[in-house]
Length: 279
Length: 279
Image: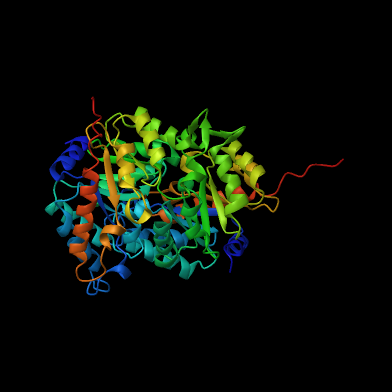
């Protein structure tokens, strides 16, 4: 199945644009998970069990596993999602970017070792650094465009031509050139709704991965107004901390479920464009 | 010791600007290493044993470990370098780049888990994505500027102001702002000597990590003429495949030693500026 079909199916099956970011921080885990061997996997498992009917995607953030030497728990987490939430897209958020021969190794890591459906990629090294990912047409390649952090402005907002900033150039390059097989997405932070709207105008229905709602402060109504497509989709909206650590107590899984449900409902309330009365 | 002092000491102790890139590709290993458990570490160990008196640095490329699930062998490799080549700088070449809270996790990975002396970082996300690395003033932060691959042109050569391309802006930003603690380097590919010379003029004595000699075709004489500082240093020149796989037979370690020695000697022949006769 093409990546694009998988994504459509994930949106439809879940009736949701929500992605849960799996960014384990053991010091925030409830007792019993914090110092337990395999605690990261067990925590993730509980989150997946509590949310799988509410989300279209899971997004493990690589750094949170690499810092703790928990690659095997990352593998187990992805295996568990595949086994129990087969419609959900698994996005390995590792923001890879390297020269062609090395990018081949990263593609092998993401798609073969971890079995992810999609991977995030940094565009700074240009097309040949993205090509080894693109050729996996059944996999998603999610290219950083306008990130959610304050420093996004430093390089991404530089003017690279009359009335065109670097992030706009990246968005157009992805839509026009890199997306030939239809397996690209771009990352656009929820914290910049004006930029989100601008990018949507430039790239048609290209799907966006949108981090930055929740802990980073992005506003759901603004994101939806700025970024949704005519079909009411086009967005995979990711929240991590606000779901994972909604409670630090024994009720963390129930609290995570409620946070994911509230986010889904709040998004779904804005999936249709407002009806303009013709009277 | 500051990173800058460590680097100076490494250059001096080895009388070398050579960095060996540790990019294990098991299918290129000699018999006996290829399918052996721990073969990646054993191969690296043999390379380190054969080259430690000839080099100022080792640079394990993260993708080549991640693709094979060989993080533990990467840890062992770095431990082994620390124990047996204490003057050499260990550069974790992982090209990290993520929002601040995640970048903290990557800094923990590079400097605590792996104990690297320096890490490569992608500047696309801006200053706050680099800050968590910079604050480790005893560690090196090596920022991608003009990479060695053909696609480097796609984004890095975009004009971001009158007569200024993105990579030039990055170089100046690092030299002027990010290098306040003196622990920055930038990556400039050997394959672009004109750009190398241009960047050297812009950033004074900021040290460069220079990949792309050897298999990628960069020319040592041109690199030295374009990039060395008045002190005859300023460069960490990295070669991977041309050293590691100089021979695929049982003599691979001796062949690697010879390749490293030839590279060192060829670089050292160009470390002093040509003497202009005053007659």
